Length: 304
Image (cartoon, rainbow, N blue to C red; front, side, top):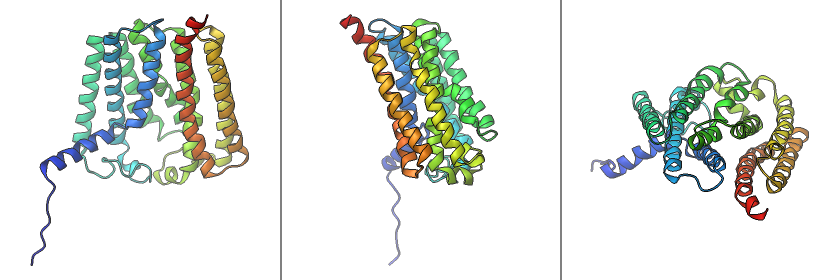
């Protein structure tokens, strides 16, 4: 009896293809970007912001960020194929063609830019598009394969979401938004270097000049610690400037001390497991820090 191989139904095939496109958008990364942008929107207004503008800005920023992620997958598909944590991406497995991926990225970027231009304001659209270029082109194409300081320099584009949210509500970029941008900028190196430490072999196989590959494990661990110290100082700026109150200050002190504790232990007693836990805590650190800033923004006026 001849063997027969059943092909998937059209519905299953369509669902699988949609899943592949969804993966291209790096959902977990984009969620953090959108979260930081929404924080910027909420902090820009003393009360509840204009929901129509806020929703349009959130959707537009999400679309452009997803477009940048898809373009990154396209450019780095050969690198992704060599790394265990990224080899499953549709571009690395050649499940999507270059044309399909590029077209998908362009459509998302176009839709997001149109939303921001017509329903928010031109400044937010241009700032978001500049962030797209900074991440997808300057960081991914130029900096990442060229220098071990790629994370530091390229972190400027990744730090922009609060500025985008602020500009969406105010139509301008204020010092408060720049302070939030600085916090993410300083947070980015210890966050990514903690990941690079326990993924060093992956990066070595890929050929990317990440700091643990070019300068070694101990050098990177020291820089993680140094950046957490500078970050700690940066997180105090909103309180010093008068943007936040004591509630945020207490949260910043506690979270900063915990992050420094992780970094110090990583420097003195390295293990892959500790590097992994430091990386995960860094995400929690930024999320709780901004949540505390938002809570302070709405609660402190009621308590004063």
